[in-house]
Image 1 (cartoon, rainbow, N blue to C red):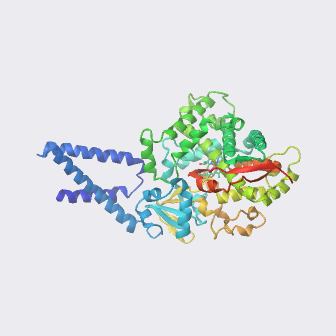
Image 2 (tube, rainbow, N blue to C red):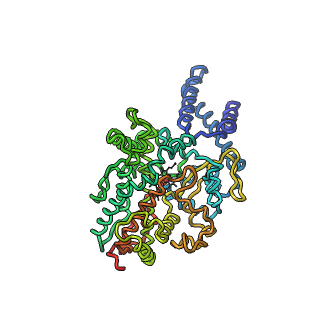
Image 3 (spheres, rainbow, N blue to C red):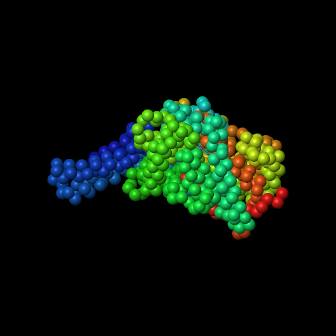
Length: 534
Ligand code: HEM
């Protein structure tokens, strides 16, 4: 009896005095090992030091271990339900108990839709985990992401450790140092250098679309091949030739496999446990190996050339042997591919989904572009095309390519969001998908209205809410490049072609089969392009 009470009390004490403080997500496998080792040692000790048989020792240890876990569980549950600093925030009670509940009751690749439904039910602040909030009050943007942010990157970013990229490192000094290395690769000068290459792929895609004129074109596939070809060229100076062959290069399948291992919302300890099980995250590891191989090939060829993004990153390694062995460089190369390809192709796919249903917007864009694009033209000629930019922004607002992130943790002072105080040490998500669909923020939020971004600004009630590229020191470094790609390609396609939904296409697959892996992979969309008639 005494032993049982002690085991229960030790379980509760390990929560109260240990697990309740600090971060533990990286230690989960160690805790499991230590617990198992203690149990095994306990069996041996009991069998050796007492008269117990081995079976009796095993059953005593199982009983005490269960009592310990029960004590732990009861303490954790009471704390999470009634005492945690975020108790006052609304949300389903099961989510307050464990982050696993969200995961087990959500199609994890549609996480953003679940968050949207939860916000519709509970308001702008929802408790979605034991220590997790989802916040879509627009006032959160500046305090969470601005220069004077009261929050930093949360434990989610430890998922791929030790392969931390500029994006996933949680150490601000390391991030800022790395960002200085990246910056020249995204300067205006560098962008001008990339534009010719982007233009080359735009031409290829226009040619491919022309070949399918009048028939159904799986535009999701073509934008995907396009964006990967562009990023291959800009990252490594390598053409993967997918727009030429019309086939997915195996590297693209690896990217999908690699991303599938990383939906946005399993708790990090769970993700790390999966990574530790041999074979379970094979796709993820294959994708890492691919990135390393591409980096190696690039590092040992054309030394000193900076014409691609990896070339700029390699400048830090001049004179050093085997830069491909550097974990952060490997991760940064992976980051370029993932961040730069899926995002732009998703935005383009959703943009054309809306344009295909709204020919008046196609006409408006075309009318606006014609006077700007006589003879040779480039992005600088169409940069201020208001309706085109407005249409792209509408796609980003309604279908943000990063729809459910970004996770942050409040710092020691906590964080004031409008009238609501969020206590210190609380993890929170700011999902752009529900953020962009709120009546309080946008007039007629479910309508695709490019004019809200220039001639009808009253349709945007809170400007801060729109941040598909995030903001502040960790914002998207590729934002300007993304706009160059999306503007020039959209302009070229619309100057040449009319577009409508293919027969039988109603957008259902795009709306329901789009997968959220932090960035989204859109479902299939078939369109019909015809020669422009106006
Ligand atoms: C429509 C297109 C794009 C969207 C919506 C987008 C969105 C975002 C967002 C929301 C973040 C912040 C992530 C976070 O805080 O966890 C981010 C970061 C980043 N993006 Fe983009 N992105 C796009 C295109 C690109 C392109 C073309 C590149 C080029 C390689 C790129 C490279 C990056 C990098 C390197 C970061 C990390 C920045 C840092 O940590 O300092 N993105 N992006």
